[in-house]
Image (cartoon, rainbow, N blue to C red; front, side):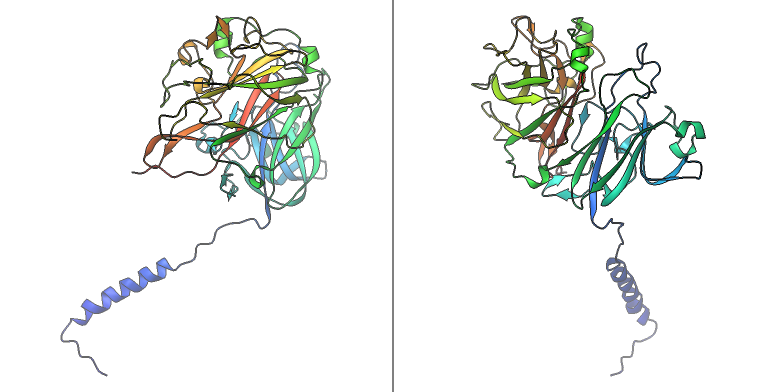
Amino acid sequence: MNINLPGRSWKIWVLPLLLCSQLLMTACRKTAYNVIEGAAYLRVFNSLNYDVNVTSKDQPPPFLAMVIDPEYNADGLITGGKILGDFLDKRSAYAAPYPVNAGNTSYKNTEYPGSEKVLVAPIVNGINLSSWAQIPSGKHRVVFYNRPISATPFFSLQDRDRKNLLVDSILNFVPGEIYTMQVLLKNVSTDYPIPVELYVRQEQFAKMPFADSLLYVNFYNLSAEGYAAANPGKAALGIQAYYNASNKCTAFGDTLNVFYTLFTDDCAYPYVNGAKIGTNIIGSYNNIWLGTLVRSHVAGVAPYVAIPMFAAKDTSGGILSRQWELFAMLAPGLAPVPGAVSVGGGMAGANPTFGAIACSNGSNDGKGTTGTAARQSPPKVSNAYVASCWIPNLIKYTASGIYQQRSFATISSIEIINNQVYLMSVQRVYAPPAN
C-alpha cells in the first residue's frame, strides 16, 4: 500500500518517530555496575587509643595504613597491594548505621571504608550494611603499618616511612559474611614496637530475627591484658573534665556484672544545644541484671539482650520514644542499691570496681562535647552523678515518611577498650522523608 504525504508534511511524522526511537533506545540501555562476585563485607577500626606522652614517647602515633594482599620489591619494601585502607586514625566513639565519613573533607579516616570510594555492602535481610566494604572472599594476607600523620598517601611516602610493620596476618573471608576488624593493644607494655594484635569478629546480626519494637545490644571488653591492674585510680572528679569526657572514663575491671536502667526525657528533638536530660526512672526498669562481662580478645559474637524501645507511656502513637539507657558495671560481689545510682557518691568517680555507661543524646549524637554549653548539667540523683561516660542513645531519630522525627531501634555493640567506650550500631532501612 502506498501512502502519499502531500508537500513537506512527511517531516511532521518522521522527526517525532526518530526522537521516540532514540528515547526508547536510551530507556532500554543496560547499565553495567561493578560487582565483586562472592564478596565478603569488611569494616575496620583503629582501636589503638593510647596517647603519645612521656611514658609512650618512643612509640609511633596510632595512625595506620591497612593493605590487603601486599606487594613487595626485591628488598622487601612494600610497594603496592590489592586493597588499601589509608590514613586510619583513632576510631570515633560512635560508629553509625550509615557511612558518616562519606562526605569527610579531612584526609584522616576514623574507620574503613569510611570516606574511601569503594563498593559497599548491600542491604542484607533488611539491614543497612553501607558502612562495610565489599572485598573478594577467600584467603588473603592482611598487613597494617604505622605511618606518619600527614596527607601523603601511603605508597608515596619515603622508603623509611613504609617499614613500620605492625600486624601481619593471613585471614580467610567467607562469601556473604560480615566482618568487623580491629587493631587492639594486646597487653600493657613499654616494649618497642608496642604489642598489638588483630581482632576479627564474624558478625551474625544479619542472620538473626529481631523485632522492630526492641533495642538489641551486646557487650565486649576488648581492653589490653593487665590494663585494669595497671590503672587502678579513680576517674578525675573535675567537673570540666567530666563535662568533656564523652566516651572516656577510667579503666574498667576485667570481670563485671552488667545492669540496666531506663530513664525518661532525653534531649529535645531536634537536638537543642544545652538541653537537660531527665532522671525519672521508667516503671520497673531499674537495675535489671543482664549478665557478666569478661575481658577477652576471643573473637566470638556475644549474645544480644533485648530492651524495650517504648518502655515509658507512649503519647505519640509509636512514632517517638524519648527514653535513654544507663548500663551500670559492677565487680562481682557488689549489688546495685535501689534508685538510679548504683554506688554512694555516684558514678563520676568510677574505677575498675564500678562504672556506668550512659546512652543519651546528651553526647550530641556522638560528636563529643566542647564545653559546658553542650550539656548544661550532667544528670544527678541525690546530688550524685548518674554516669561515668557518655555515648549516643541506642534509639536513632531521623526524618521518615511524613514525620520530621521518628524513632528507630538499633542492633548495637558496646565495646570497652581500656579507658574508653565505643558504640557500633546497625539498623533496618526506613521510608525516606516525604516532600
